[in-house]
Amino acid sequence: MDTTAGGAPEAARTARAAAGGGTPGGDGDDGRDGPDDGGTDGAGRRDAGPRSVRLGSVGLAAADLGGPGGWDLAGPGGADGSVDGERSAPPSRPPSGGGAVDVAGMVVLACCAVWVMVCAAGREARPEGMMLALLAITAGYAAGRILGALLPTVTLAAGAVTVLALVLGPGHRLSGVRAAPPLGYPNADAALLVLAAGAACCAAWGVTRAVWGLPPAVWRALLRLLATAAAVTALALGSAAAFAAGVAVVLCSLAAGRMPHRLLGLLGFALAAALAVGGSYAVAADSLPGGLSESLTGQLTQPRVALWHQALDLAERHPLRGVGPDRFSEEGPPLPTDTPTAETPQSAPFQLAAEQGAPGVALLGGAYVWTLCALWRSPRSTPAVLTAGAALTGLGLLATVDHVLSYTAVTAAAGLLAGLVTSRPLPAQVPAPAPHQRAGQGSGR
Image 1 (spheres, helix red, strand yellow):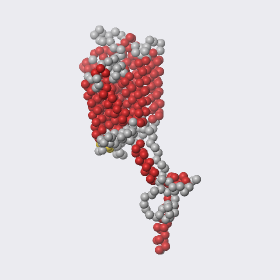
Image 2 (tube, helix red, strand yellow; image 1 turned 90 degrees about the horizontal axis):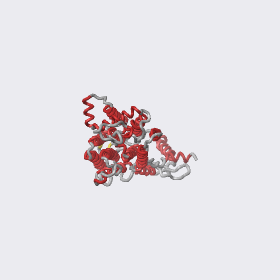
Image 3 (cartoon, helix red, strand yellow; image 1 turned 90 degrees about the vertical axis):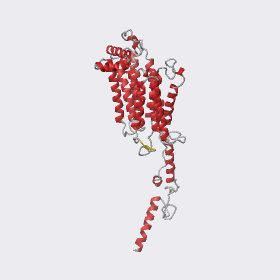
Image 4 (cartoon, rainbow, N blue to C red; image 1 turned 180 degrees about the vertical axis):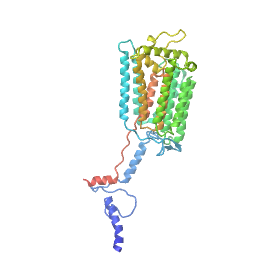
């Protein structure tokens, strides 16, 4: 009895020592329960043990900051998705299939460029403007993917501040030539402000730690105030539509924190864009009831609706290749004497329908659908993704009723925002392997 009772603890100590690679009472295990500073591998070398794993976890935590001062878009807060008591949707696991989405995007852009040249072939067309727009959005998207992997939130906040500062700068910066910075056209400046509002709200979701002594809640409030200021500035420029879009972006960003899944929100954005395009087509084709058609025509202005009629007439006469890039004003039927002439029909879908036919409109819709798919597969947090989707959809709604996409700065800014929110963070440094893994590797030699 005594021998059996005394042998049990001794056997337990022997088993623990064998598991740890040492001997009972020796260097591997002295029989006392205490902090483990490591063990030896099969070659007799002493490894760092759990202490190195703890140091590795500290390195990973530092890498998670996403840049200086604690800015990150990977997910707002802790495991429950909350930051300083503010509840938000938990960050989703990085989805697979991102490479396929990137390839699809390159195919869509390549098809757009090829079709522009096809529509210009054999005509006195000018495809340079469309090619420049494609180059701008591609360059912006590439820059966004690069900067998003390094400093996503800082870039978003800096971009929003820059746009607002340019718009509120000296008056001569807004009254020069059409291509002068920022743009020289109030509605195009307002479109930039909508994107700035989206960038500021995305940056607000990226602040997860104190920066310069200010807690995350203060930074989030300041960035959302910046987004609201951008929307109000759009109203001051005379664009009520851009003001409504900017306010909608801020409200969608606040609501996105309560949505655990992004797909439903992205489908809602697609539905809104489809309704806007369908509604503008119904106005241009006079297919709405009389009272509603007159009301919408009064809000959109009669000259604009007349240009849409002209674009539809050209699209019906040239359904496949259109009349050629930048030839709308030359090929269109004569307008009434009281209607001012314009180089474009003041709408991206109608311009593509008139100048590039039905395939051009299909490629525009394909580019927008691809953008939503890229946001859906983005590894970034759901609130940031939905905020960017709201801003880009707001820009699309503005482009439906005005020619804001004719400005290179707007297309480049849209590509930059999409690239930032769809970028993938750089892989963190892998910590040292656990002691038992090293022991197993050493004993195999």
